[in-house]
Length: 257
Image (cartoon, rainbow, N blue to C red; front, side, top):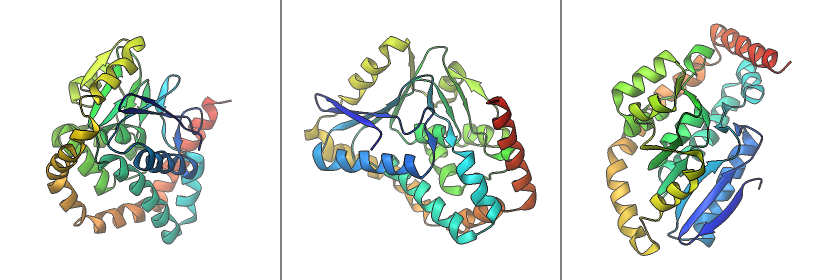
């Protein structure tokens, strides 16, 4: 596992470092799942702080991994990839302990959805860019992720940020509800750990039950949107979507030249 885990009292800090900007690919998902396995096995009842290093929390999907998959047009391959992606995010969303995202910087697309999966979210004052930029680059937002966003920030904000693909800063992210608080950079982990420590292992059963009840309606809707997620899988293979994805990948490569 590439990630580092440390413990402060009853709080486990997981620092994501699968790759320099935590692009989401099979290696990232393996690291995430292994970190959660260790949390469950070795630190039962402990709260979790999820963070990263540098100026980026997570850049979202790894274009060089996913766009070739979409272009090949193998629905079974894409469905398998999507199940792995969705399963990893849902593990974070439904963890039976308090989860805090200590967002050190940029979070795009799936990276911002990962932020939204956490119970409490803190960012850095004046730092980072944030966007749900899937739609402009030819990736429809799956129904599962729409429901996560609705739960975290409400339907109006979820619709606006999903359909516009607009990039915004930390202060606007706070106004929209993606962050509960913004703090100076040197206070990020201290504040995150303090917030996570509100819950102790003794309070974990009550916390888990309450969280399950609060998330119940959302989780129930997941059962009814499998057909919409299948439509999203088909849409990423549409020729127009593939052209948009290819353009986005070329733009990214140009930025690195």
